[in-house]
Amino acid sequence: MMNELSRRDLGRLLGIGAVAATLPPLFAQNQPPRSSRRGGIRLSANENPYGPSTSAANAMRDAMRLVNRYPDEAQDELVTTIAKLHDVSADHVILGDGSSEILKLTAAAFSSPTRKVVMADPTFEAMGEYARASGAEVVKVPLTSAYAHDLEKMAGVPSAGVIYVCNPNNPTASITTKQNVRAFLQSLPQDTIALVDEAYFHYADSPDYESVIPLVQMRPNLVVARTFSKIFGMAGIRCGYAIAQPSLIRRMNQQKAWDSMNVVALAGAQASLLDTAHVVEGRKRNSQTRDEVVNAVKQMGYEVVPSQANFIMINLRRGVRPVIDSMRANGVHVGRLFPALPQHLRVTIGTPEEMRSFVTAFRTVAA
Ligand SMILES: Cc1ncc(COP(=O)(O)O)c(C=O)c1O
Image (tube, rainbow, N blue to C red; front, side, top):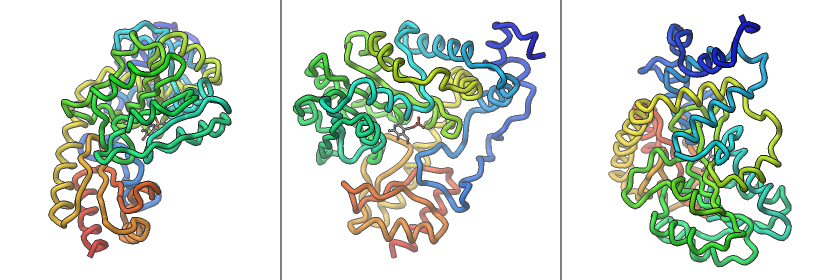
């Protein structure tokens, strides 16, 4: 059968074709996948507890038939779909083996021993590691008291190759307002790249928040990263992408291994983008469960950073490390220590059932 596949057949199979539709779903709607391979409830990595959409799961299963082939056609198809989604041409898109690869490519292409990487503190640490691997100095700028990026200070750091803006920010789940991000992008010298990481974009619903992808056409120094690991529930299969002007995409591509994407991830991503209902449902479930958990935690007397993501940050007013350990002893894995906020506990929003277990354990541990 494989030998008879035409390009078009391949494309159809990688979408949500008839073959896929007949396969049983990997994740039944009301049966979330196992919480943790280590046992216990896993609220530590900002994963999606519900998994991918049924159509994406079926497309991935179906794509197993194609694993003897290189992923060229599947990559082209996904790039075309992403370009259409964001109203840009295909040369504005680069795929990554997770958005982590996008961050690494950006650091490799635009930072160096003489070009620093500037990032918030705290933020998603991986960018700092990639920068150091490129020999770049990493400059950390504390978040403001509202947990936003201090963009004026970040823009003022001399010899910056890349300024990394994580919006919404991990680990605080807070946003930097669209007005501030726009002003920052406008103020930036052309030879400094702004990397805006929108991993949690789908969960943000504040009127003060916006994606900066529509600004890419006007900004030759803007790279925007997205992932299929969060709302699309595909963290284990690895797929992400960036949108930027073609001259930047070319420089990032020079750093990239050939064919770093796999056909299964590409098929899942393609089907995910076509299943908009899954995004709407995921956002709704997250915000409902998040509201309930936040209320319960506040009733216990704790402050919670206003969350625009699928996780929350609780101010414990005491060192977080023993709480992390005690929570694990009670069967609940929560986020790691973030040294800039040593009294804050990061908790991923799981299913309602998982979060009831979290609240019970937290009540015991906090007492
Ligand atoms: C802000 C942010 N960016 C990027 C990533 C990396 O995600 P992935 O490589 O799975 O796309 C994460 C993962 O948690 C994240 O929180």
